[in-house]
Image (cartoon, rainbow, N blue to C red):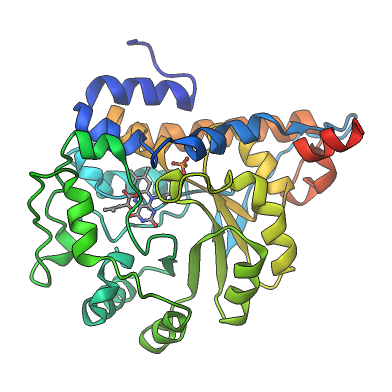
Amino acid sequence: MESEPVNVKEFQELAKQVLPKMYYDYYAGGAEDQYTLKQNVEAFQRITIRPRILVDVSRIDMSTTVLGHEISAPIMVAPTAMHQLAHSEGEVATARGAAACNTIMILSYNSTCTVEEVFKRRDISAQLVQRAEKSGFKAVVLTVDAPRLGRREADIKNKMVAPQLKNFEGLLSTAVNSNDGSGLEAYANETFDSSLCWEVIGWLRSITSLPILVKGVLTHEDARMAVEAGVDGIVVSNHGARQLDYSPATISVLEEVVHAVGGKVPVLFDGGIRRGTDVFKALALGAQAVLVGRPVVYGLAAKGEYGVRRVLEMLKDELELTMALSGCPRLQDITRRHVRTEQERLHSML
Ligand SMILES: Cc1cc2nc3c(=O)[nH]c(=O)nc-3n(C[C@H](O)[C@H](O)[C@H](O)COP(=O)(O)O)c2cc1C
Ligand SMILES: CC(C)CC(=O)C(=O)O
């Protein structure tokens, strides 16, 4: 395929062509049977849109604010690790692509340049958070679904080699021997802190004045606990189905979390966003904005900064068209009644 990709899925094909198998498998893969990986995408396909007609949609406004920061559309970049395995310019190119679309990028501390991995060493975590704050980052996102690394069987077979992670230079050696399987697993075993619990929110508060979001909430119970712990935002996420296989498709639990949060803090969403219609569905079910993981990395692998920009633009253009065809000129016009979930469809058959 040499023609310009016309949708995000075609970027995945391009990325597959250009990336070494070990890296493509790392980016594309999920945990174990990859049941949740498939469901994250397929659950969107079971939700239909209920379009309204004869609404003036001659001007569509997709702009919104997240924690006070204006963005051009409710589509942001999820934190994903090690972008230099995709493209030599790594996270810098991704950040430029995101900036060109006037949106927010969440940087993984596992950039070839994280936080959750180094919580075993809170002194190091504190340094990283404070460095980020100093260099102008606007929020801290704490990933809470990785007390241990999920079992990614492709990485085990490929004996995935993890590169040195630049953020830790002078702080921690991230070089591990991967002769026995996934180098990433070995790295995670050394660094992930499986004793992390709610107390960490108070500790983070004590070391930074930035807003704190928790990423990886899938139940109403934890959503309530997060609000009680004083977080500034919640990300409904299953880590792109790379951690607990048979965890639910994220879109199937978004509404449960939104209800529990009751508007007290913003709820963001990720997992399986591949089309503008997916973004529309997540917004209708109560997300303030969505994060996009793999498609951004595929865009980066295929065409660098330009590819990242194109992926974000495609999703934005598709969302704009979806809003026009559904009778929603502004984001606040997208309501719960604009979608029909599988549960509702099954219920109507009773
Ligand atoms: C290659 C890759 C690396 C990731 N690295 C991180 C990470 O370092 N920290 C984190 O919180 N989430 C990480 N994630 C999860 C993403 O932030 C996000 O939750 C997920 O990719 C969303 O699903 P999607 O890929 O279907 O859009 C990673 C995901 C992928 C695919
Ligand atoms: C370096 C990692 C373990 C990054 C991560 O969270 C992932 O690969 O899903």
